[in-house]
Length: 473
Image (cartoon, rainbow, N blue to C red; front, side):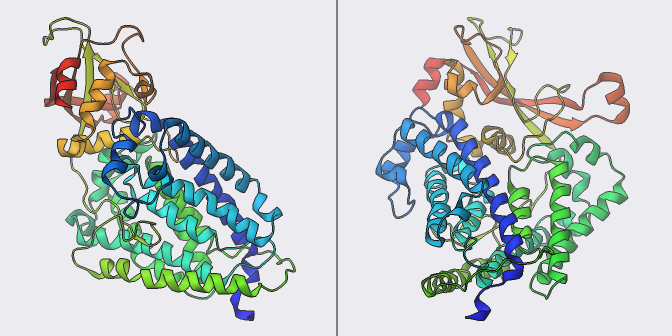
């Protein structure tokens, strides 16, 4: 079938595949370095306990069949190795079916991780990586030109990501309609980056322009993805520019990067296509069958998008084949942070020697400037932001976190920037307090060198010792 492939997109496919492999590599590296403290056998939300109560059909995963920390580590590092091989272009050296199987491996491994990751893996970019990664299996390699239907489905994902995010904003917080959300967002976003302070202090009229440009990019431009070239390329390029702006303004794990990867698949690069044979019949049948399946499953996200009760970041099937996306339907006006402290004193008093635990990414010491971590995902830091919004978000894991701090647990301390206690001298008590954080002004920054100013709000967790924590758990 002559219409089945689009040889003009061979370079687009190549760029897309290598960029997607890089995102996979970051995702697996994040899992390998953080899992023991989060979902390991002694983690805050252990996988063995999860698979005891959740059947395989609800959360298909290799870890439903067997779990040990060693087995998880093997899977995570194997994912890193396969992603690195794909980044180096190994799939192009294999026959078509071999390349497809190679792309299937990271999808199966990461699906297995996400489906047992619980709260730590509840973010929209997890499902987005899986949905995009599944389609990548059927994009082919150098033996065949890119299939048109797969390129269309990649644009369909990009459309849902952008348009769904635009709709949730217009239906949600009124500040999006008033163009005022960015008066607050750069200060209250989950994890500010090194430039977020400067973005916050941009003139307010420029913030209005930012919001208006966001609405245009998310509510109008997505439709242009399905127009002829070069309009579709221009639309994708505009989305890439917008995502790079978000990369500069905050730390959103690989959400922006996977969106950029998707947009790259819609860009037609000016390059002469190589001569390749026509697609084999078995490949055409498989691709068309998968496309029909995915289009059928798209009913749910479309229904969600047009619903007045639109929800964000939901998977409609356990394989995460077709999902709904969106972010920041509401924007906080005030930033709260949970500050965790410990003391070695036998009796905890207000004037005890309370020492603060330093997290890697979330605000803590007002004088410590935020760093750039994205696309790497600091999962504990992100969940601490949710905990500050409401203790209910932390009900399942915060008590175990405190217990691990009281034990000076090595794996848990690796998630932090610094522990104030020596390895062989754990604290006697740990407490948590809620503070209000705000960015300092230009004059305050010059005078104090601090980018944050914080004010005590209330107690989040009273002084707790190990015996009390164990009894509660």
